[in-house]
Image (cartoon, rainbow, N blue to C red; front, side):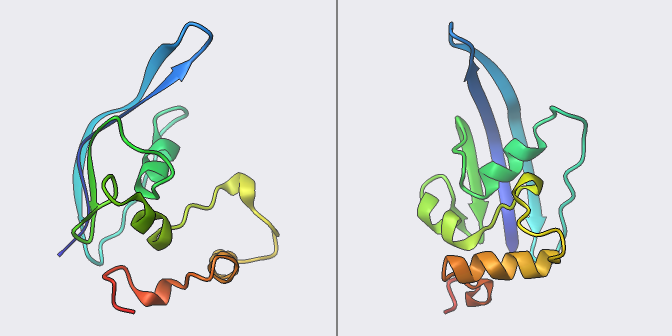
Length: 122
């Protein structure tokens, strides 16, 4: 089963007073199978954070679709926000917490444990 699929995803941002648009991501497509890992690397500003925020449902793509476990994030942004987490390195609460502890904190805060499952198996 495909865990994640991006189909022709493009994201632009308006900058400046005159509304000039910059393209952060253009026509990005890939598939990630269940159990596979994804590493996002590249120099600043290559679109790494934009990609992760799109997957987490924080941003909407201008074009294309993002499918996670057969659900369109673009069509059901609420589902994406309930089933994904984005924790920025700038948002680190306590330098002594492990990644797992920090995720657990946010799960408890939002009453949304990952253990419910991405497939809707509550």
